[in-house]
Image (cartoon, rainbow, N blue to C red; front, top):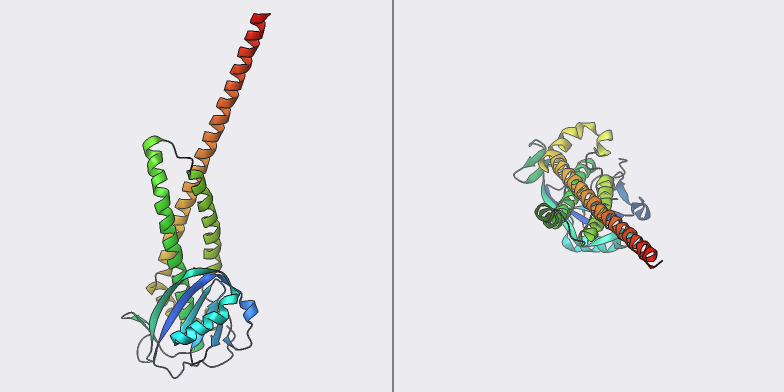
Length: 268
């Protein structure tokens, strides 16, 4: 990322990082980079000495920002958020600055050598992915719960109720939305920060491992695949049932035509 200013947190020894998933997307182009501390990802300073890192896939990560300043910032950011969620997903972690401790996570807190912008951006990247995964995990779990009754009915009776058609439509819309979002967040991609600061790869790997980003993404991907296959199976069953019904209509029409023809011949 292009570094523009020094970190406002350089003199701090302990503070909190808080990630908030606001909506599906943030229009960062409309925000601009005039007052940015750094870009890729966009990093800005807020009143009170805090720092905020913004991601286009709907996440903001606050460092050492008071609740009052956070509310004020989110109010200002609100018009740039597309499809804002009624209840934003959040996640937070304590940050400790201690050059004598190896950088990484210990006792639930992240220890850093210093509070420079690039280190904050790495933490923000991992936190933003973690909070995004948390949202998808809850959504996918709910969709799997909705599918289970239909699977049990299919196993018990060999048929599915007509209302499954609405389920297939809902699942299709969910898959399209969430696969776009997961792809937009680029869960398995390394942040651009590492291109300019390769020495921080070890720190990033430890953070990614601590928050189990790759493992959680793998589980989520498998569940999405299961839902997709289930939706496809339900759709095929509905289509087959519709095709069978049409075939019976054709048979009935042919039978009626034959009966009418025989009746006509009998009268003659």
